Structures are given as structure tokens and as C-alpha cells.
Length: 115
Image (tube, rainbow, N blue to C red):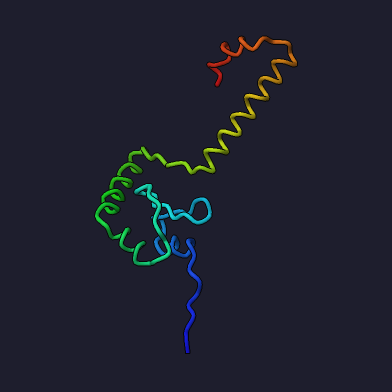
């Protein structure tokens, strides 16, 4: 009789090593220490990455930066596009408000310190 194991997903791989990975864009396993996308289909690939010398060194450096408050997270494409869209919306709203109030667009330069 053939045994069928439970289905492994990117989320189960991330749960096997809590705190090391996050899942981005529905299917990419991203190492938070290395900023590197890991192929998650094989358990040995994920385990080898976690035990690797590069990951261990970056883990120690990350924790040191975290203690000093110098953490910088890489943005995903989805979040970058979302930020760009909200910026475009703000600009369009500002232009609409200035046009409605009959204020010339060159006056925007005086508003720069507020942004």
C-alpha cells in the first residue's frame, strides 16, 4: 500500500523554520537574513540553506543590526507598485485641488518642505 503524505506548500516550509523566512507574492520563500529567494519544493534545499555558512553569518549580522536598530527590509514588487500607485493618486488629488482653487501649479514648489 502506498502512503500519501500531506501536501507540502511554501507556507509549511516557512513554518518549519520560524523566523527565518517569509512568503511573498504567493509562492516565493524569501530568506529574511539573506534577502534571497529559496526553492522550497525540496526540504533538503531549505535545510541546507539554513545550515549554510553564508546564512549563519548573515543571521548573526542581522541580529546585531536588529539590536542596534539598523534593520532594512527589502520591498516586494507588489508593495513597490502599491506605493507608486498611492503616490500617483496623491499627485492627481493635489493637481485637482490646485486647479479647483485657481492656484498656479508652480506654487507647488513652496509646498515641498511639507512633503
